[in-house]
Image (cartoon, rainbow, N blue to C red):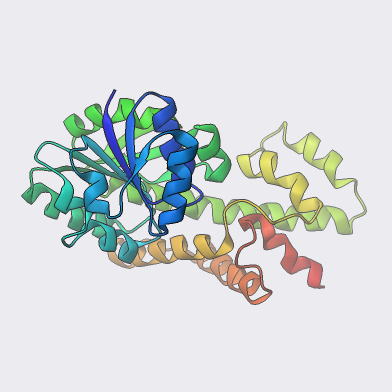
Length: 289
C-alpha cells in the first residue's frame, strides 16, 4: 500500500481519490475549494491539505486531475505547487486532459527534482470514475509506469503505456476525435429514423447487435431519443479537448475535416445554452427544424 496525494476533486477526481482509499492506500487530498476537500476526507477517511505542496509532502505517488494546461501549471509550480512538496524518487501522475506539450514541460521540471512523471488522461466519464472502471492512457518511462500501474488500477479497468511522455495525451486526442465523429453519426441516424416514423428504440436494439454498435450507441442512444442530456461529459469540456486536438494537428500535419465540422456543431449547441449538456446533445440541433 502506498502513501498518495490527489490534487483536484472535480467530478472525476473526487471518486478516483476515493477508490485509492478503498484499496487501502493512504491519501491526502487538495482542492481549490477547501470545503470540498473536507467533505471528501469525512466521506472516505483520508486527510486534506491547504496547498498542493502540503498534500504532496512525503507522498510516493501524487495524482492530479484538473481542468486544462493553465490549471495544471497553477498546481504544479511555485512554492505551494505539487513539485515543491515532492521528494526524490516520487512519481507524479497527471490525469488532466491537457496538451502533450505541457506534459513534456512538467516532466522536464519534475526530472530536475528527481521526480518521475506520467501523463495519464482517462476515458470513461463520471460513471467510469465512480465505478472505478476508467481507461487510462499513459506516457512515460517503462520503469516509472511499472511502479505506478498497480496504484492506478484502484480506479481503472485498463491501464496502458503508449510510449514516452506526451503519448498518453496524444492517445486521448485520438479518443476524442473518434467520439466526435461517432456521436454526430449517431445523431444523424437517430434523427433520420424518427423522421421516417420508425420505433427508434427498436432500431437501436437491432443495430446495436451489428456492425454499427458502439459505446455511444449502447450508453447514449436511448437517452438521445428521450431528449435527456443533463449528465455525462459536458459539451464545454469536449470543445476544450477538441481545441487541444487542433493545436496538435497544426504540429503534426494531420487533417481533421470532420472533427472541425463537428466542433462547429458543438458551438451551436453551446449557443443554444447547452454548454453543460452531455456530448450526445448534438442531436438537439436537428430538433430545431
